[in-house]
Amino acid sequence: MADFSFQDLTPDLILDAIEAAGLYPTSGLLALNSYENRVYQFLAENSAGEVARYVAKFYRPGRWSTDAILEEHTFTYDLAAFEIPVVCPLRLPLENPKTTLLETQGYRFALFPSVGGRALEPEQWEQLEDLGRHLGRLHQVGKAQPFVHRPPLVSTELLRQHQQTLLACDLLPESLKPAMAAILEPVIAQILKVDWSRYQHIRLHGDCHIGNLLWSDQGLTLVDFDDCRQGPAIQDLWMMLSGERYQQEAQLETLLAGYEEFCEFDPKELALIEPLRAFRIIQYMAWLAVRWSDPAFPRSFSWFAEPRYWEQQILTLKEQLSAFAEPPLNLQSGL
Image (cartoon, rainbow, N blue to C red; front, top):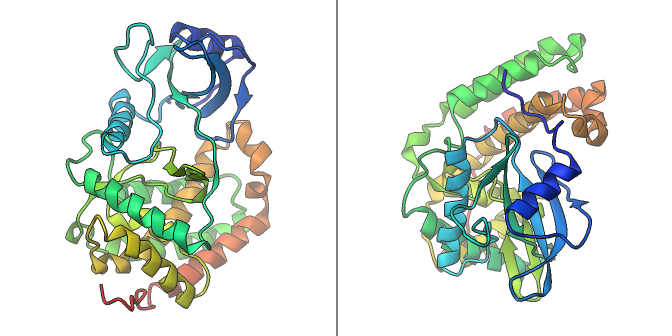
């Protein structure tokens, strides 16, 4: 079995790795809010002799192949080449750069400049429209070539794997297993009923939610491409939608007003919102189940071990099954 843990990632190992890459921290390590990987902010002198903030990202062992991580890095550089505001990894080691990804004692890591900002406020329509412009430009670049080493966003294999993981999870109460099994099967069947091949699949951010969108006086920056995948464009749009149906339609209209300045949107993809929402619900539960042996997860997600969480998720999946029968969102603009 692959070792997905960080049990040997000590502060000394982290600092030695950063120095081997060519940066010499002048501060301690500040752990940032990341569960899948281990991410630390620190201060160090840059090439101009000025103190600047940097981030060291240590990738979870066994999750991505080296080629898949490098493909993520290449994608961010492709975007930056078109002046799309993203955070690219530094080319390392700094004194004689050969790659963006280094390895130390079995841990692969990258260094990034630290970018500040506050979370995007989706109720601010001008920010939402600006996000649409950024995503339109991002998807134009994403269309230029496919990912080779990163898996597709949705697949039968992945869904069935998630299903098995959840039903085998020790935290799922025995009394609730029949109900969970009974609702998972029809929800997964509805997701797989979609003919995903009908839609154009492009390189995506893949995890475009508020936490990965930083707003500052300089504008919007998209961060954390760790989950970038190949999939339909709507994946990078639907997570910004919330509230009643009429509110979601207004939000989507605003996003697409900016988006279509740079990239044409296929309105048929509106039918994918609920399948993608259902997929994310299942994927998130399975992610927590698989990562539960990591001590950071019981500390941060203690509610995952409570029966009421599983009861609520069964109810959520039932509601999601009903949502499949609803018509897709309607766009007044007639896209």
